[in-house]
Amino acid sequence: MTQLALVIDLNVCVGCHACVTSCKEWNTSGTAGFMADYNPYEKDPTGTFFNRVQTFEVGEFPNTQTVHFPKSCLHCEDPPCVPVCPTGASYKREEDGIVLVDYDKCIGCKYCSWACPYGARELDENQKVMKKCTLCVDRIYDETLPEAERKPACVLACPTNARLFGDVNDPESNVSEQIRDNGGYQLMPEWGTKPANHYLPRRKSAITIHKDELTRVDNPLNKERQLPMPDDDEQTLDDVMSW
Image 1 (tube, rainbow, N blue to C red):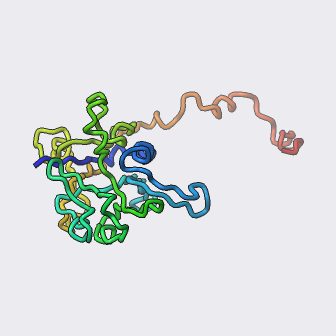
Image 2 (cartoon, rainbow, N blue to C red; image 1 turned 90 degrees about the horizontal axis):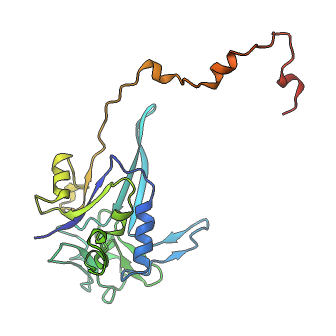
Image 3 (tube, one colour; image 1 turned 90 degrees about the vertical axis):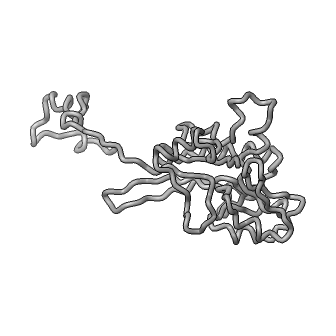
């Protein structure tokens, strides 16, 4: 069975939030919209997002690293959000494995958000229904768009190509190759939900820095020292000026 999903390369994600803003722009005006924003610039902003980027530090000083971790619905093979829905609004499509919400059936009870171990569902405060990533289902099948643009908005917007899209059940697909070659992993597999989205781990790159590379050739301090310096008993600008 086809299983469309995202593969996110944490090694090249720079936390720019281009995926967040492009997702918001496309989906708030598309079939999944609208996505509410109340007091977006106030002290306690609220809003609905399909995709969020969490940034945190790992390690202990001075050996620390900043990690940018994008997270959205993982389109699990065994989604716990589906069986708990009392109205059948949450469902998983057989043809491509995408998990969706039927807004006409959703009553905003939040059962699905409680069942989701990844916190991927949010209540739209305007429509009072649960919303989540749709993998831009209204875009990826739109034949009026050039084939190269039939991808989720977040994938097209990423400046570092950290987001890949394809069929993870196809062993010949690019996403499957990336998972195999770079040790791709599922988020919290112990929950048994079998997330379709995968992450590529951060990879250490060996960089050799030579001693002469630590000194700038055009160091302005070195140039200043070539000029005559005042004697110790002479006044300097710090003595005569009030900065």
